Length: 328
Ligand code: ADP
Ligand code: MG
Image 1 (cartoon, rainbow, N blue to C red):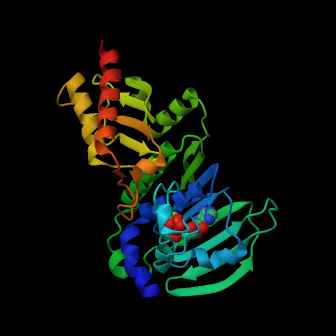
Image 2 (image 1 turned 135 degrees about the vertical axis):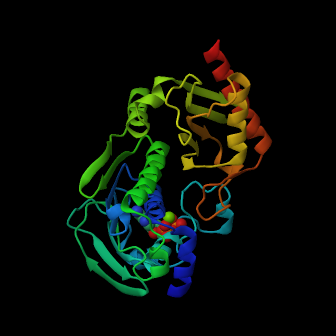
Image 3 (image 1 turned 120 degrees about the horizontal axis):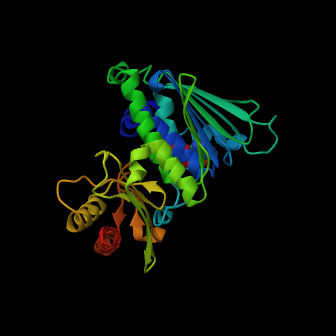
């Protein structure tokens, strides 16, 4: 089974940033209010994600590392309308099969409590030992791909890998504005983001993650029709420092890259403003979880809407109206 894990690891573990994404999603699923991401050497040497979520019970620790073990869905029917970010139970098994992984967790408020389990590549030590940890979980991933040299060779420079990690972090930190976040690289604090509840706090975060230029000429919108809500920020065409890659779209807190969504935004943008401009946006779509299907791809960046036409039309008309009013 460990070999199967290593093969499957290719699906979810491509580079340090994919590890960060999976670990952070687990932290969010555990109800974390604060998530700390720490790296050394772009993540090749060390990736550590700490959260203050619900933690994992002593008995469940080894289970969390085994394939297809998920605490998040009980049956296939539950896949309909799944609200948590993870639900396949593959990430930890896959990551641990290609690294030296340590899991420390505590479900209690007593900080002297806590339990630890270690896995090294194919060698699983099922021994769970006491280890003090505040309520929540820390996952430490050392020496990624140490036992799969072919894959390790594909890692780029520290700077490049850290760039990917920072982008993954940026997406996650934008996806949950209500959560506090920290990113550290080689002992240096890169981002320290307070949980921001109101518009001022949200915009402070956008500025920290996307730079001052983003908000300088962006329109804030918040529209709701028939159970669908769209809110966030869209850059106006006078946007001076528009960067092509500043396109963030979230569906129910999930990072999504979707052709239908991209199309609706592009259409509205073109229609109201002018051609040749790259839309930049941070947008949040909130819908009833039963109208989206997230079980499309292991990395879960794709969604399928039950009624794609309706979502497309809602996005298009909302943006069209907001942008049109802004121009007038
Ligand atoms: P999935 O997220 O798809 O369930 P994972 O392999 O990512 O699968 O995680 C396996 C299980 O380990 C989860 O279902 C959850 O019960 C537990 N787990 C992992 N990370 C955490 C965490 N940070 N806090 C609490 N539980 C966790
Ligand atoms: Mg997961």
